[in-house]
Image (tube, rainbow, N blue to C red; front, side, top):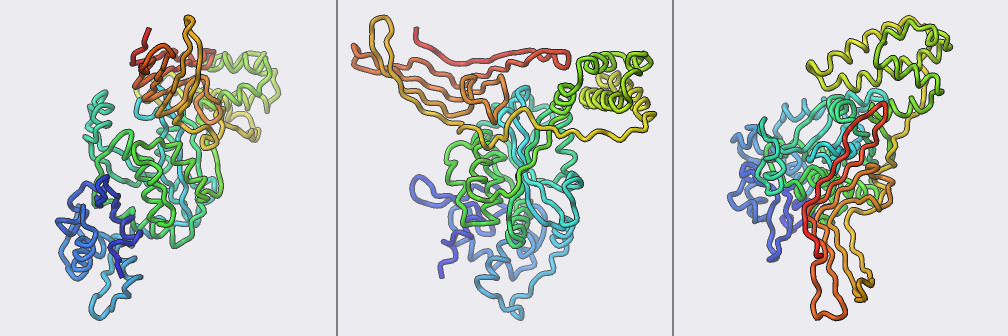
Length: 472
């Protein structure tokens, strides 16, 4: 029995094959290994782990016995070796038990907030997990806990984050955060649509995922913005739940969050997909459903709630007054979410709107809201290679185009932010028939375009950034 070479052991230790044919763990915290050689020697780590199970020494950042610090390892090895409880007494692990029981886990959902063009760290989207409780309904799952992986940043990181994040200069940690706080951050403040992919994992698979999450609380990974990022390490948790799926093998160099969501769906792990539209989407959809007269009153109310007393507004039917007021409140909440003095005028206006709404004894209208961006995992792949030929100045040529990521304005729009472009590492090589060598026609490490439509609801500026060269 060669346990040290089994897939499950390699998944739990995050071992990957090196270019020279060896094995090395992606884990960067020495406290994650019980053997000094554990990062590169799976057999030595297995032996040290088994020995550690007999010890009461407190290890790792969490300062627990090995059985409790590495519960997934203990659980799997016990399945394989059938430990004799008279010789190896199982530790009660009260801290893990309390943590696990608090979830009361029933299912796991992959959460994907869409890209946010005004934040470099969020342009490609983000993924994390939500742990759905057995007693929770679709309406109360906002109270569930999430499992999130992110870089630990200094308070004044700024532009430094983008640079250091590329080269793995920050440690990345797993954490558990209430889902409603993440919804507030992404949907209400950043105005990003959120997509929820509920997985069809079995109870044992959910348990394995949570046990390994507990283990990772003892350690950190070096965070790489394009490689070992949030999406990459969320996939590692899904592999811990079901080791037979090889998800990380598809991302040897760089990892784009939406590509990982697409892969999870293609692997058959996704059961149900639900959207949680941003407050901006909510306001735009509701305003679009209004009559022209109602839209006029909506625009007047968000500028000056004194218009509540206007005869023209009061002439609307009460259910339509209520709908306009609710939409106005959504708009004002969207702009008051920034906090501080900047949001104070919007909060003051919203209080007046809510007082007027409370005087109308009308049931709120239930209007289904769909995001403007289609389901992201149904969009095109983010990398691209193309070939072409042409004629310029009486000279024929062939051309090869390569793009590492992500989307340009001419690509099919479904699944991606409308009127936006992000291209990373785009290269065009051209060969003219009358030349012996090909030349670099265009090269751009990064090209970003944001064409934000301006209307009465939004006046965000359009902008673009392009770094590169072009042969002329």
